[in-house]
Image 1: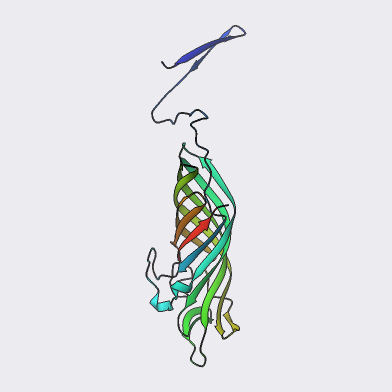
Image 2: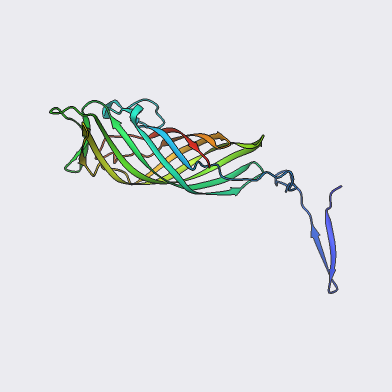
Amino acid sequence: MKKISQTQYIDGQEIEKIYVTSPLIPQKSSSKHKQKIKAHYPAIFLGNSQLPHTQLNFSGNDEMYSRDNKSWEWGINLTSFCLRITNNFALTSAFSIGQVHHHFSGNHILNTTNNQTFMETVNDKELRKSYISYNVVRMPLMFEWQKRIGRDDLFFALGSSVEYRWGDHSRYMVGHSKTTVTNDINLNPIGVNLEARLGYGNILIYGRSAVSPLLKKSRAPECYPLTIGIGLRL
C-alpha cells in the first residue's frame, strides 16, 4: 500500500500534503542499501603521451619525427568533487597539475624563428635527445558510474576536460649538456580534451585525447596530444 495524502490541522486550518510517485523519479533508498558516492580520481598519475597529427589517432607524427615511446606526462590531483545523480551515477570534477614531455627522434628539434615554429635538423652534432616540455593545470568534468564489488569500488567515467598550459620550452642534449632552443613554441595556452577512466579500488587506467591542437596551427605544425596512463589512488 502507498500513502497518497496526509491531512493536518494547524490553528484551525486544514493542510493537506500530496505524495507523488513516478518511475521517472529516482526513489530515495534506505541508508543500509544506499551506496556512498565519491569521485575516483588518482592522487598521482603517469602516462605515455603521443603526438599524432590528427584527433583520436594512435599513430605517430612523421612530420614532427615524434618519438612516442619516450614521451610522457606525470601529475597529481590536488582535490576532487562529486555530485550524486543516482545511487550509482555521479557528476565529478577535479583539479590537477602536471608536466608533459614530447620527444623527437634523430637529430630533429623544434625551433621558432620570426614567430614561425618548425622542425629543424641539426647537422653539426649528435643529439642524445630532443624534446619540448610544458606545465599544465587541468579540470575535468565527467559522468562516473560506480558499484561496490567486494571491499572496493568498480568505476568507469567518461567526459571532457579543460587545461591551461604554460612554461613551454624546446631543448636538446648533447652528452650531459642541455641547450634551450626556444622558450616560445607557439603553444596554445588553452586545450580541450576527451577523457575516460576505468579502475577498481586504488588502481586505474586513463585515456585522454585532445580535440584542440597543442600548437597554433597558423604558426606551427598541427598535432593533438594523446595520452594513456595509470593512476594510483591513496
